[in-house]
Amino acid sequence: MIANRDSAILKHSMRARAPYLILAAAMLALYFPVFRVWFLGDDFAWLSLRLQPLGDALFRPFAQGTVRIFSERLPFLAFGQWFGLNPLPFRVLSLITFAANLVLAARIGRTLSGSRIGGFAAASLWMLNARVLVSVSWASAYNQQLYSFCLLAAFYCLLRYLDTGRRGYLLAQWIFYLAGFGALEVTVVYPALAAAYCVLLRPKELRSVLPMFIPASVFAALHLFVIPKPSSATYAMSFDAGLVSRLWRYFVWTLGPEGLAENVSTAWKIPEIAIRIGCGVGLAAALISRPTRENWFAAAWFLLLLAPVLPLAGHVTDYYLTLPSLGLCWIAGSALAAPPTRLRAAAFGALALAYAAGHVAEVRAGLRWYAQRTAAMRDLVGATREAHRRSPASAILLAGVDRELFESGFQDEPFRLFGLTRVFLAPGTENAVRVREEIGSLARWRMAPEEFARLLAAGEAVVLVNEGGFWDDETARYRTIAGSASGRVIMQLGEPAAGKWIREGWHSAENGFRWTSRRAVLGLPFAPRALVIHGYAPALVVPVDLRLSSGTIAIGSTRIRQEGPFRWTAEFAGTARELTIEVDRTRRAPGDPRDLGVIIQSVELR
Image 1 (cartoon, one colour):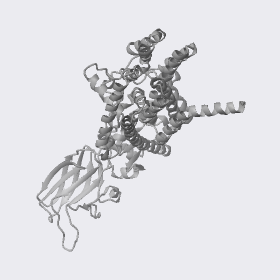
Image 2: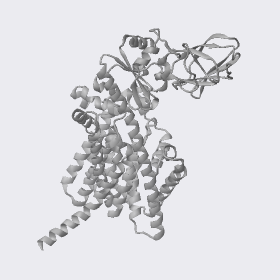
Image 3: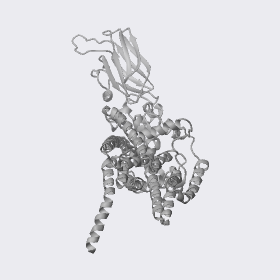
Image 4: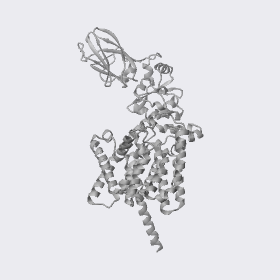
């Protein structure tokens, strides 16, 4: 009998754990591509904490006056010290925390809906929601997952205390609640969440949560009035009518997928709108058909957790919805667990499937984006480290850095992690990028063309060029075309070294020059501020009209009326690293089958 009893207990235990194991397995299957994601943006600033004194690294306010010891300082310090630039520990930590959050979400959802199915459905919908993507994929956003764990664990302990009266749960609630202040500042709203639950469902127990307002008030006062914060428009508080529009924006973001038509396929344009509308109608129907106090608390969960970020008009971002979105999922889970009719089951089932399809597609697209963008930064960091290893005393100049790559972390100084302080953008490359003025200026990355030419001539610079995602050492070629230390870069088109820059429309080099056809394209080592073309217009083609352009941007045009040499100076426009020279007509010399335009001897970049 004892064996039978033990077997029954084991089976019951397995059945009880099965939903949570299914949730964890589904989460891992959905987010498995996250293991291909490297580091991005703020990650490099946090990884650099190990270069500072320990006291400053742990406790000195950074960013917007934040001191998130548990979610940012300790993980980046420990993992950076132990594992270097290996992102695996960050991904494992994030997924384990997310799995724990799903279990807590399901258990709390079971209490709110009165059904295991309701709790499991709510946690499943939350797990699929694309608004969670950033907190799982970006190491710097781990604070969203950790504070979610602290608040969910605290609230679950409160529910257990209210059910059992055991004061140990009350103590555990306080421990998780106070730990949340080391994860994210939004923890200050937890007392309001606990109080809202008690007011709606257990009014006699309200007095047990009121003391929690004391540390929240102290923390808010310290954060607002004592800890210094940078004056940045991005995080300026705005209390105006925009609060309503921002709340609506966050609500719509939670309901359905976003940007699939632009990032995945235009076929999603109508379906993603339909999913948002359908989920909005379904959620309203769920609240109207079951206006329970538990559902109103779930709605309060969504609103209260968003309240601290709604005034941030300059920083409306979807990862703020990581934990608030769970409130709406609890409402949906309660609706899915309600006694079904055929019509109700079909309607809510169809909505759930559409919601899952849209959000899964967005999560997958987002994971691909993170993997591709972080891989570009990983390759760049690897190339600069290798260049520094080969030539440790040289400055490193980078050409071919576009806006997206620059915004992937340049201003967070990933190179200083390896002691590299002399990394710059090659002259002209700065025209293609944009800086965040609140954390630095473009001056840090600029190098004057005169200094660039001097370093090249002295053999004290390495030039890395991005060609199709691969970084090539083009120092020798740049040294060949850098004519002097005057700031000019002269491309002699008849020289063999210029062959790398010759694109379509040119004839073979002869006697120090090249003929153009009707349209000739020249690659440029960088996007200059101005250029000078030295050429010759033969009697064969004059008068002739010349037009210059870069990409889709016109630079200028001129008419050459007489035979002879010409010199054309023009201000460069755009950021494309190419120059197109067009003539309005070509001619053929006797016995020569080529269509000839004009002769170009050199292009001088300034």
